[in-house]
Amino acid sequence: MTHPTTHFTGYHEAIQLLCEYGFDGLAEALELLLDEVMKIERCEALHAAPYQRTEERQGYANGFKDKTVHSRVGDLHLKVPQTRGVEFYPQALERGVRSERALTATLAEMYVQGVSTRKVSKIVAELCGHEVSSSTVSRLASQLDEELQRWRERPLGEIAYLVLDARYEHVRREGTVVDMALLIAIGITPEGHRTVLGVSVSNSEAEVHWREFFKSLLTRGLHGCRYIVSDAHEGLKKARQACFAGVPWQRCQFHLMQNAISYIPCEAIGDEVIADLRDIFDAPDRVEADRRLQCAAQKYAESASKLADWMEANVPESLTVFCLPAKHRIKMRTSNMLERLNRELKRRTRVVSIFPNEASLLRLASAVLMEVDEGWMSGRKYLTMETN
Image (cartoon, rainbow, N blue to C red; front, side, top):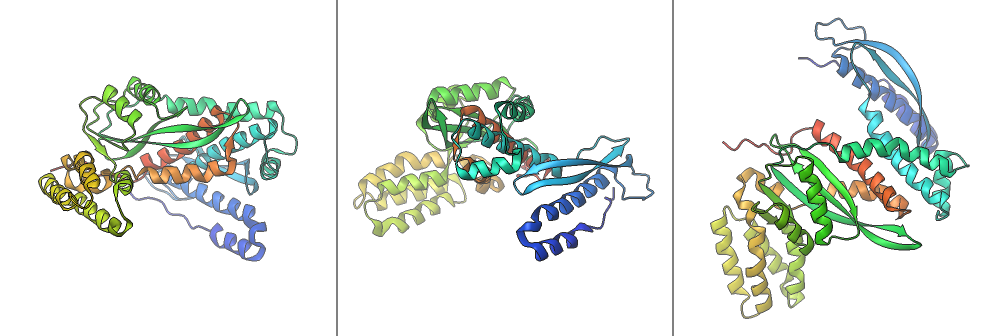
């Protein structure tokens, strides 16, 4: 099948606006770019360019519908392409709008509850208007919560590999600010795609919270897991053993090297120890990795006995990855694939700084993760799962 192509006419106009007006022209430039991207998306959905005659055409263009989108650069007055004969809504618009709405609702909650800063007040005024009431906040939240809850509770299927991690955010509770854990699970499907399986806001990473999170994943149909990678948090470990008994576990090699620093007796040998650990991790197979580990432990047995004992007890937990096909090992020996998620989350949560309640944190995190998940599932595969 041949894919239709369109000329990106708005590109040069957008560049001209930015050159002439700088940031003052950002909103108008973004309007032009989004309008053009949505036109291209419509052509791809129709399998035909404008006025093109082709047997592959799936439907017909049906004009445009005006839509105003509130964003942090101002109101965007867009022309959303319409279709006839095929269902279509531009992803370029929907993905960005969902997380913007979640951020707007969170900031508005802060404003109404009287905990806003001058920065928050300014942003809320730009996004929501100068008058922000409790009813406005309720309306903004209700537009998202049902959709995000459906996504968090959607049925799951077979997941080959499971990646787990947590991050902490500041949340206001009963007049005080506390750190709350955001538990996140990523899966690798049997086809090789990454997918965000779930997210939960909890008081901590204690066993009871991880166990409740795991049970929710299993209740939604998660099955077939053959491999898990995470850090060595004790609460996560106990919950994993209870809910995923018998599934091979890989201790994240990145986190393990960070833990090793605490056992290095003097700074002078720090680089050498890290190099030895990397040499173990880069071994061609498990037998060679075990041999290199024994050599390293013997090397430090006299000069750094606590380090040697720690290596013998802990490093084997980070060598489970050798049970996977060789071409999967680099990507699956750490939980670092969550770094992009954490960057996306941090980019949004740092605007808020302190969330007014748990619901607002869950709403914003869910919106961001849902958008990332859509990109992953519609993009290229993360792993090639065929092992032959």
